[in-house]
Amino acid sequence: MKKAFCFLLIFAMLAAFAGCGKEEQAAVIYKDTLVITNTDKTFQGARSRYNSVLTSLKTKVNILEKCQNDRLIADNPDNYFLDKDYIYSAFEPFVFQKLDITDRFDDSLTADSAPSVFETDAGGKSVVYSGDEKEKTLKFVDEQITETLTAEYDKRSDSFRCSYSVETAGEEKAVEFLEFVTVDKNTYAIQSQNTRCWIAFDADGNITYFVCVQLRNDEITRDDSIFKAGSAAITEFKNKVSRAKKSDYDKIHEFEDGTLYYTDITKEDTISIYADAYKSAFV
Image (cartoon, rainbow, N blue to C red; front, side, top):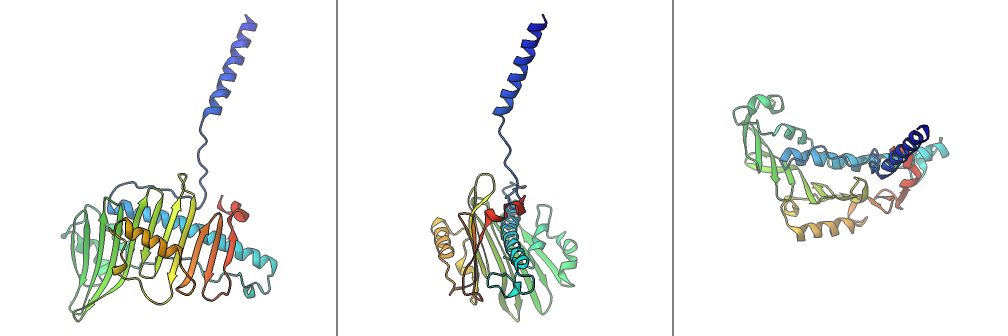
């Protein structure tokens, strides 16, 4: 009886171990792993996905550049700032001062509720709002100036465009704009008035490739729009960004095959940072 019981116990343990071996291990979440928390096909859902993509991009670059600088400081604490590979500026792409206002562009917002919702932002100006699922427009108006913030969403491509303009004396001037396009499940295109980016992830949310370029002088205009522009325009955008030259841009960040390449007009050579050398910084 005891022998039979022992055999049953051993069999149960072996079965348990076999079951454990079949369990899929969860993907490791690193600091720069893309984590999508909102999958809604709405403007707010797309805004949330943009925030997640941008956070992943900025985390990857800023951690690698900080590790690079820390190494140079450790090697030469007195004169590290003279090293040609020392990076002075933090990576802060796609600055849009008014973008946070669009966080309140939800389904509950109406023309009647907008004046109280945006009272602080309006700074004493009248508040005029209109909107539907595809486009929302907010205006701050007084006798001298009209500020207009527009948010557009395309459900088919799961993409959005935000723009901010100021009108004075009957003349309207675009101040800021931002476009976020979902190219496919793991690939995104982003552009603002002075920055363009193409970024791709694997199925686990790890960055496989990106290139982010900042214009030197000329601004990108809405004539260069990629919002609802079609596949041909998106391909042209990708080629334009991936073939960026130092002569055309102030800064170029490119991540490919596990290496971050940083090109700056103020530096003679491109800086190469090998991600695997600083892998522990992302855990």
